[in-house]
Image (cartoon, rainbow, N blue to C red):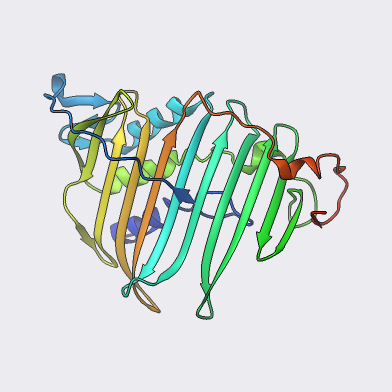
Length: 279
């Protein structure tokens, strides 16, 4: 596979790891501006696992990021947006996910907007896992359906299998920082924690992509607190600008509690049955 195709794949997949009504994509939140903190390089130019002044080892950074989130609760915010050259929206997927420290405990909300036949279609998909069962609620217009989350064949899904990587996006991080040249360009402080600021060396132009940029904040332990990937690409319906942005917050402080909509269906049995409307 050519390097150009690999970059195209990684940039698409970087945002396709989020909750949805079907297996799909996700959301983000951009952190508030923070003050620049002038610092000198650490010995040998190393700030975090895989992060040096002269480059980033994508595999080491991804592994450290995964370790930082292992056995911890956290909140992930993820956004995937694609716009036409005139600025009009092609689609947007915005996800907020709260994950518990143990597998199968999560509460996620995906707000999804797609352009279909010239009009925008919006729906909201909510999911909740209590460690034993997984639930789903889908709202489109004035209609909401909810019930146990099931496979297409009708069997209930194991909550531990719904998000096997708990939206850590570790492998997407590995691909991004392996195939896009980046550097540590400074240090910033967010809520008292120092982070390395990572940026792509220059706007890359790798056909079929151009204007590729990558920015990220990385903690000394290797947690990728946030990252943003943007690029232009030409599709059958014209030139589009794509942006993928993610952030990880409240590590070790996130609580996963049952949302109100779950209570009305919590006593549903695990027998095979379709989603039913909320009363």
